[in-house]
Length: 248
Length: 248
Image (cartoon, rainbow over all chains, first blue to last red; front, side, top):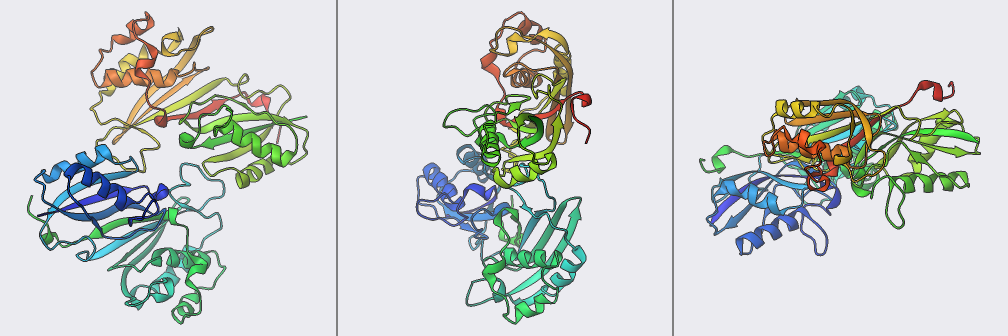
């Protein structure tokens, strides 16, 4: 069996998330269905990250095993001909036997885009959070610094069990009216990025003091109360060791 | 009665065009319904241009008469609170009594955006024509020059009757993989921009010789055969004489 790895881009607006669900449109469902109809075999894809409903991806990575001998470079063309146009396959590589899109990943990078303006363009509304209030980037950066490093991020997620993650980067930049948050970690808990962004926006607009980040780690705030909307979130990049791929 | 003029922006993907139609979502229908529910009076809006299904607008202009005394600057806020987020009101002014969004317009500018690349981002697919073939801008510009000026544009439209229009500008530029066509005319016939773009793309990809523009004016080609898709088209700007608006 060959191990095919695909780089995927999608507009998540019209999907109930990455993970396959019965009777709902999902990214995994669309890709698996198209692969099965072409390959005439049962296909299960593994994704690097199970993005939530409405979340976008610029750099999702999936892999699957196949007995087919279709040249690996053909997969983007074959799938893009069949997939809805809000899902695109950007590249294809052959992975070595042990490659797993989720477990082999070294790190994930997410970006969250905020449109910091009152009257907004409808061309932006699907792809950013519209947040008209004044935002202090220095306050958000100071609060964000407290999160960088290895922590138990359970206050930012409903996930139970192993909740320690290593946040390597939390960068916040403004380009005119657009504010871009970039977060990189070995892995993220469910809802973790949107919860962090939710708190940072409260701090940046001075509805919460920046000291709240210490209190959150002490369990003072509730996760669900402050989740930022999904349409601003993008799975941007997933890193792997290049030795996991076959030579081209 | 006051004459209120609104600047409107919309993502046309989910609408059956500007003009009100029974049982179909339209831009006119959405705006009129929201105005009537707020103003508690019958409202009919006039649009500068009746954009087709799927066509976008960055600078549509509409006007309507009202007995209401709501301050004009309030209309963007009132409507944006109620409209779906793919339709936004960008500005509001008070017009003098005779102002008519369609008949008072001096010129309309449209832009058509082509994404000239093979594998494309899903974030672009709603907002541009994806056209992967190589395009020669010099050939398209030479052919386009033949269209500038006052002509009977009936070969580019199914419209009958008065079909003479004055095309003042046809500009074609490339920014990396994006090609932007800008057309300005006193007015356009139905389908005229998409038909012109359809021909220019055939000429630019050398499927038709540039001399075809002369033959089109002699009635050799059929309008419908070559209409470019709507998602690349934007009503960009409508010009009026500033004396038609009240002082602010």
